[in-house]
Structure formats: C-alpha cells, structure tokens
Image (cartoon, one colour):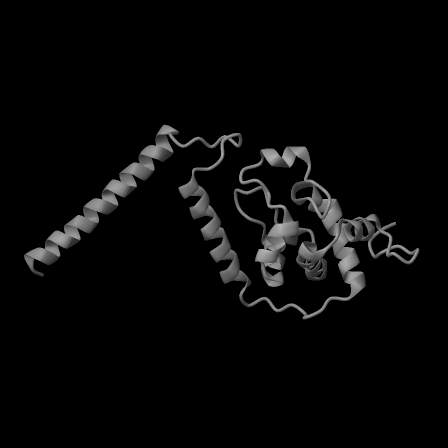
Length: 183
C-alpha cells in the first residue's frame, strides 16, 4: 500500500472517529431536544422519514394481497379504523383528536397520506407499527384478515367523501342495515 492510499485510509478513519465523537457527545450531553413540543430538525426529520419509508417498502415487498376487497370487508375495516385509528389519523371531514397533535412525529392525516403508500405497505405498517412514532403494532391483536380489512379501507380514504366516511364508520351500510362489525 502506497503513501497516498495510507493517507486516504487514515483520513477515512479520522472522519469516522470525529463523527462517532460528535454522535456520542450529542447523545450523552442531552444536546438534542427530545420534547414533543419541539419539532424535529429538518435533517433529523428527513433521516427518520426516509429510513422509515425505505424500511417499510423493503419489508412489505413480498406481501401478497387480493386485487379487490368485497364491500363487507371494507365496512369491517371502517369499523376497526373508527375504533383504533381515527383518533390519531382523522378521516374525511374528521379531524384527529386534539391530543394527537402533540405527538412527534405528528401522525399523518391518512386522507392525504394514504395515497403515498401501496396497500401492502399499509398492511405492513398496521401489522408491525413504527418504532418511536406512537404507531402501534396491531398484528399482535388482529389477525391477517382483520389487517387486510384495515389496509383496504385506509387505501380508500384519499378518494372518500366526508359523507361516505360518516356512513361507513357509523355502522349503516346505506341500505338500512348494519355493516360488518357493528352492533
């Protein structure tokens, strides 16, 4: 190995050592404000969001879901969503609960955000949750079919009117009957 190669290797090692020292200094001094009242710095937000999106896409890659989901399954997913998801994510014409706005990262309003995800990615997120975000892993308490109903319903949110959302989450199927999962 020549002098230039040794110099380059030492430069890389020195850079890594400085980066590790900065990282440990920030971690051990409490320099980074972790309060939920303070938003993340742009670089931190970008890093967390990019890492999360790539991680979900990678892990959801092999999930196979049916091309269409029957209306009764969508209605069941609506009931699960209304009971477990709407508090943080809202719905068409429905704002999230006030307390959810104090979470960091703030839960996405899925009426808009669901359009950015494939159904299999939504399924994976509902099943596994997202670390350090407040998003729970519903897979511990919901079976594959229930998760499918949730993913299918969430995938429909971007095109859903407030009126349709109110109808499907109320337990009324629009024909005088109840939807699946409602009393």
